[in-house]
Amino acid sequence: MSGELSLDTLLRTMTATLAEGTYVFATLAPEAMPAGVTPRMIFAEAEGITLILLREEAQAHGIAHEFPCRMITLDVHSSLEAVGFIARIATELAAQGMGVNPVSGFYHDHLFVPEGREQDALRILKDMARVAGDAGTG
Image (tube, rainbow, N blue to C red; front, side, top):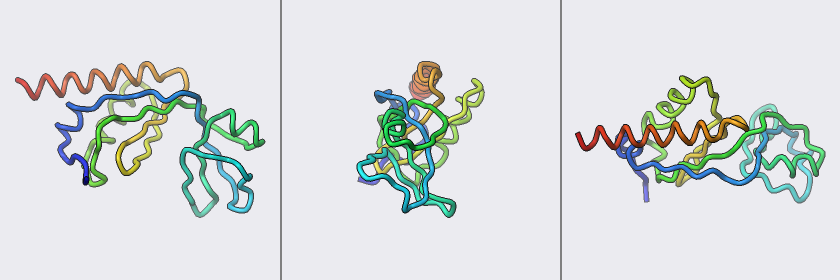
């Protein structure tokens, strides 16, 4: 299962699902990771370990955090080698004054958008899929 490569197909067939809860970004030294923390993502950088986790969990463990955001999963299996998919989405969101922190998993791409802008992002994504679908049938 290598995923979809075609940008047109990815845009035309994408749907989006809003995850429950508010996520935050945090960074810790590797040895400072509290036991029992279950982040959505862990990424090791030279400066420390980046965590994406639920705000409630960060607060419960006393972890300093930033960027309260909502996670939107793009329900299309994009290839890790797909060209332009996230760039197109980020461009559309930027045109509406919205930053995005994308994360690609093996099967799906996930967008972390500012809390309070999630419905705007979902609308933009739906419009993108509709326009791509209209272009494919024309």
